[in-house]
Image (cartoon, one colour):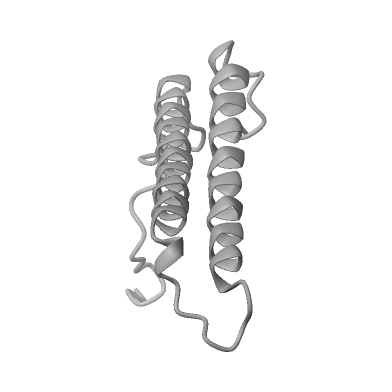
Amino acid sequence: MNATTQFSLRSAAGSEPTAKTPDRSLKEYILRRIAIRGSLIGLALGFLVFGTLIIVNGNQADFHDVPGGNCIAVLGGIGAVLVGTVFLVATYLHWRLCTKGVRRCSSFK
């Protein structure tokens, strides 16, 4: 009897489910949806706060070589606020499109 050919590190056949149960799949979908929304809200708030701080402190910008350096800093702050607004719109769209049903959201597989 050759014992080395019968040895396997895998578990016994049939002990692992081959397909995901619908309940587990739904939980994964909900967790993914919460993670996406949290990330989008975090990015939006970060860019909005960062842009606001740049605009508020724009007159303290120290650009000696560039004429109108204050204007450049304020334009950068406005750009950051616009990026934050884009993330807020993306969050709103994700919230509206993925709330209606599981099949409607494009991130569900």
